Structure formats: C-alpha cells, structure tokens
Image (cartoon, rainbow, N blue to C red; front, side, top):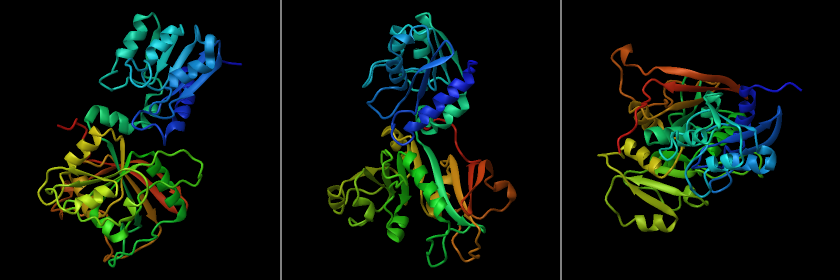
Length: 373
C-alpha cells in the first residue's frame, strides 16, 4: 500500500476533529493520527473539556508502537497543565519521531511553547499543513484567543426580495424544513444563541438545538438575551428549559430581577445609553469562554451589529418567495446618500438546501483587531 501524504493524513485528522463539533466547548476541536511505516496505528479526537486530548487518545490506541511514529495533529500540542497533563510531555515520553501540526495554538498559555518543547526534545516538527481546513473548525476559539471575543454568525431566513416577515409580524415559515434542520446543526455547534428582547416578546423562542438524531451528543448552547430594560417575562419559554441563560442589561438593579434569577437566569450589566453596548456584550462573552455566537434576531439588532463591525459571518437562507415592499427587511440601517456608503459582502459559500438557497457571506464591516477590554 502506498503511504499517504502529510496533507492526506491531516485531512483524516480534521475529519476526526469534527466529531467533537457539538461537545468540546470551550476547548478547540482537535484531531490526531499516528502513523508508522505507512500504517495508521492510532487515532484520537478531543470529545469534551476535561476529557482526553486528541494526542493522548491516539497514543493510548497506539501503545508502545508509538515509538518512532509520526504524529499528525490539527493544532499545536498543549504545553501547559490544565485538567489533563501537557500533550507535549506525553508525546516526548512516547518517543515519537516527528510531529506535523496544522497551526500554532494562539492561546497565550501555549502559543509556540508546545512546538519549542518538542523541538528541544529532538522531535522534528512541521507546521502549517492543512491549516485552512483545521482553522475552519475553530473560528470561535481562534477569535477568542486573538480578539478577545467570540466569532459571531447572524442567521436570517428571508424571501427572494430580502424580507424576513410580513408587516403584521408573521414569519413562520418562510424557509422550508431542510433549512430548519440545517439551522439546528449550526445552533448545536455554537456556544451561545443570542437574540434581542423584541424577538423574545414577539416570538417566545426556546433557542435550543434540536438535532434529527435524538442520540447525538450536544452540549446545549447558552441562551443570551439583550434586554436593556430587563423586560423579559419570567414565564418566557427560554427560561423553562435546562441550560444557561444570560440576560444583558444596561439598567441599574431592579426589583424584577429576583424572579428571573430564581428561574435560573444570570444578569449581566454592560454600558450603553438607550441600548446595551454590543462590543461590551461580546467582550464579556469572550471572558466567559464562549467561542461561537449564533444570532437570531430582528432588523434592529442585526443592523446595529453589522454597523459596528461585529458580525463575522452572515448565514442567509433565501426562499423562492416574494413578500412585497411592506414586509420587514433584514437590517435597520440608516439611509445611504451614496453607493460608497454601502456595506459590501464577500460570498464564502452558496448552495441549495432543500428548496432554499443558503448563502454564507462576510460583511466588509467586520473588524479584525483585538477588542479593547
């Protein structure tokens, strides 16, 4: 049998890493393959925080055969002691000959130290193979480590003429069942689902992830509500199901908060005049180790987020329907005086999902610099 290339082995490691797509938060999704004499002798992936890292799982499968092997791993092996020991130590003790990793871990506790430790031990290390594919699994972790805030995706279900609801508020269902199934997969990979109080009052959503496979392991995302005046009713559906609920407000403590806290909510205070300061909200979510935030909200919040450069990715499900000019649009943004003021988008992916189109695009307003905290 012909030995596979480094890229092919790392592609397999990326596939393994994806098995932790719904469960690893706040840790990155990592996969590992051990190869010796052209044969795979061990595989592993990180399943959940506190569990074995991908390298240690692969080493446990390989046993003594790991000596002299090449390790293909989708992220720099850790060099610090958390809930598990450093993977660099385990690799050195196993006497592996070579490590090929897709990228450097930007975590300040790691960032290059793992690679240095391996090289100091005489292990040959190559970095950067299949880096894009590995990074695509961890945009939120990378964002949190480099910018101090999560990766933000905003989801919109719209008609072909860009409308999200009729003038009377009716919006269920613009898109078809296949699109709704797809949405729940995106929800399941997210650390949190964020919305505004207007959506809660109008639709009373549950904001949880419900996959078609009832046996699928899912770490339910937290539910985040931006509610400047703390108007959320204690009987709201999102407060009646298990899981964390965070309510962001910019108001002083009120007598109504006690019942919300009793229902399991955590009240978070940020600045802002009439509305919550959105940058502060995302900074706080970063401090709480949220990697990916999925936004399902109305035109006001979506407009504010895109204006402030806080949306990293738009995911738009476009149905083959026309709702007319009186229906609600996607973003509440100020009128433009010239085309130079427009917000441009870069298409990342366009595909058909059932009868609808799914468009993934990056706004030109997205900010890349590290947020100030």
